[in-house]
Length: 383
Image (cartoon, rainbow, N blue to C red; front, side, top):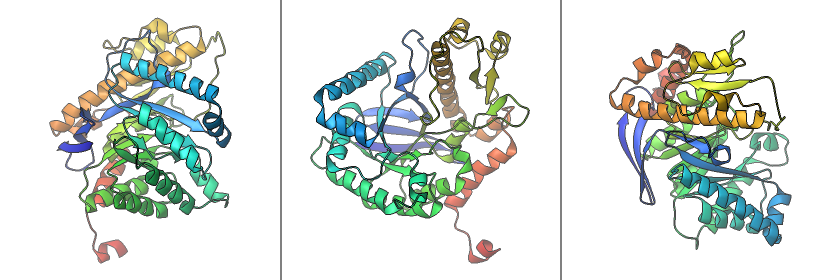
């Protein structure tokens, strides 16, 4: 149901090209995954990507979906709209990612999630728990509660239509728990994973990612790894430009990266005189802060189908959607270029040519590969 073949791999990082077969669909990675809620049908970008349907369920919301058929019909209507939107953009693979705000879902809740994934997802994906680390720090729950959730979910999959199962690994929790989760999934035969970065920058959690990769290498598993809730990074002091650390996380071994679904939502303020956008420039790996029309002109690429007037729309809501479409398009084009560069064995020189990529970032990426694949002697460890 899910087969992964490694086509190319960089010598010193986890930058790689894989062919992934999901239920007969062959896709090459790396790939950008987009939030289907953000796609604008009036902007037809030239891009290939996966699709994410990310739904947060409070205990009250999921209970209402289970007990109130009218609310379930509205929920399904909205999902069908997203599926049609995905078809309009030729999105071949869809991840339905269920996000809970609680750690003790009942059997009916998990069955409803599985039944929904059976209809609207290409994989069964173990639910994530938003702000899991905070729930554990509060003392009300422990990692064992999440392990119980995982086991209950996987047990309930029996009897549903066959499709690949994807394990959820929250990497913004203490390092000591990552091994337990990976061991559990490998014992259950799971060989594809969704890493929940929890709204953090993936490069800031190298130990957890190294542990994931180490388990895979030790067990000789060529896994498919998707990452969600991944942050682009922060601007340095006195700079309006953010280094694109989301794109650089492909070097950690991620085969696809989704959006960060956790930031505060910005409501449509109607007309807004301030442009205030963040646009990705693939030639420099910078997210530029845009406040004036002239700043769009400075980085506007010839290959985009997002028109300047889309980015200058008076409506904050439409303007932000245009920003997202622009970034999706440019990120997708960059993944196509990465596949070629990796195949040619030139990834390090390629990254060094990017104005906003510094050596420290490259060192982090290289160390993850080095420490996940090489066993150190006791003398080296102590030294």
